[in-house]
Length: 290
Length: 146
Image (cartoon, rainbow over all chains, first blue to last red; front, side):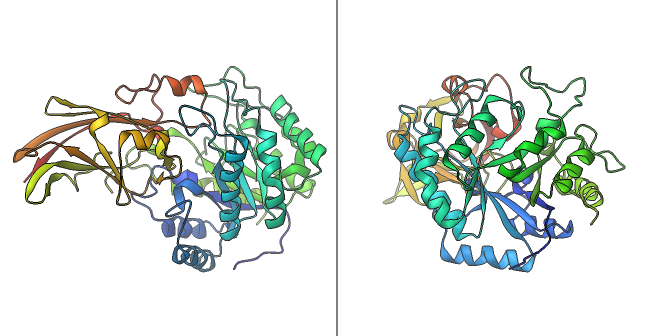
């Protein structure tokens, strides 16, 4: 298995980026090879998408998973899972049922060599506030997460704000429990300052300054390196990447930046997201001084 | 798999004990992640203008058959975006040789979307806003029966 002693921000790719191509024109191995081409070493998968026979993959599939990691020098970084407590139309899952679902994902993430989970919370309203029993669900899963050394991280994504109630509630929970197995995945969409004329901007959204990351760094176990527009000279024109990377480096943050391309144009016929990702990786590589 | 939701491969009449009992076709899930069966909202099938109600269609995932009622409460069986589902349609005598137009609607819920939006989901109508990563609810394809 590939291993690096290098500390600091490192490059990876979230396979969600390939959502318009995966299973149609790209296999799992194609995605691994694409990441290898970029010289990146981290990967994020979506459990419900990229694991064959999820949630019960065969041993043969798991062996193949590790063969791919070896062959392309890829580190399993983040396992994307969902707490699907609205899964039944008629009633909510109980806290215990939701925790069992979460624990099944923790075991599977561990079996595949992951250390971080992007744990998506079920929401209750238009403001995307999480279910009221989220603390109970997480608390019930914490002992297993500690035992298997998995860090469950909700993603903080636009229109949320790093200084808003959602993040404050999560940080309060981390401080109350003292846990190192629940934290944050910061999606760089929270730093977006530029919007085109025809682009949707959520009325709730207020961009964060890169400095707003600093107090949260101890709780951040990986980041979604969200990007919107890469220019022909390899700059991201909507998110202040140089300032963000500088802060991560100066504060000795150690972890993976997982590229996530979410633009709806990736569903256009003929679109090749691998080329879009490469543009961003040219920028990241240069900013990181690799 | 083909990019179209209704696949061209897998469309044929079904024969049981020497009798044509109906037909089948295959679907892919036009979503970026898999769903549990209870998240699915199957809708109406229209074949050459004839409506076939959702309660009469059987979904088949990885070789197992599920009725409409069974799917409503099944939050353990998972359907992946990389595998097709077979829809089995009871129709004595099946479909005649030649071209047929299939229109089928289905959609699915997501726990990370606002519940109010989820309650208004209609498998037989598109949502107010089209999001490519959720696909279209209603898909149509013209395919041949041999």
